[in-house]
Image (spheres, rainbow, N blue to C red):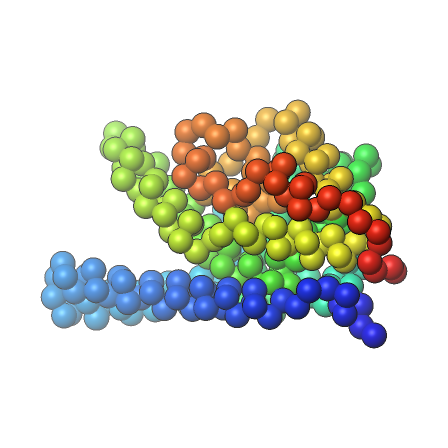
Length: 282
């Protein structure tokens, strides 16, 4: 019996996310083409369609690389984080997923997230604060949560959506004296794109699968709670558009953050996880 036989089937999640990714990447050139046609006629519409197609292909093929660059992530060799690399290898084998590369961000705030370019190319990104958290908490549950997003193909939606939303916010911030007015218009627009394609239900599903794939009971619940407590002790600063990437919402709810909040309350997630006996073993 395979290691994944005790896990819920990911088929429904995969089909749903592939459909969302198709709608996003297909709607981008069509929408841009229609807008430019309305503004400038058929010639402008054709140009907009071509630009939109190029943008969609770029999001699909190198969107994760662009986002890694925006976030300041660098390659993390396995020998520099042997405990994390070993945990990722163990959990990925249990869950039937493949993590191509590890990346690290120099930041004391503990967080980890997964990114995808193509469906077969996924990466795990951690901060230096997350690696330090491993000294006081078992990272298995948190790694399993992120790999559950890969298993469900949540990452092929989250990656381009976050990149688009973050780029829209950055565009607004570059408008100088018009920055505030631009944020009033573009902020809700970017937030609407996020909520259109990303559902809070994905976190419940990832928690359930991660819990079932963990070698011991309550590893995911314990990891999430400890991560939440540790996050409160360290200053945090990032684009609020990146909120869907993280295991928990690290923002304090001020400013633009509520427009991009996609995480259910942690208390609800804990109630779902409850306690259990071990399902799988190494």
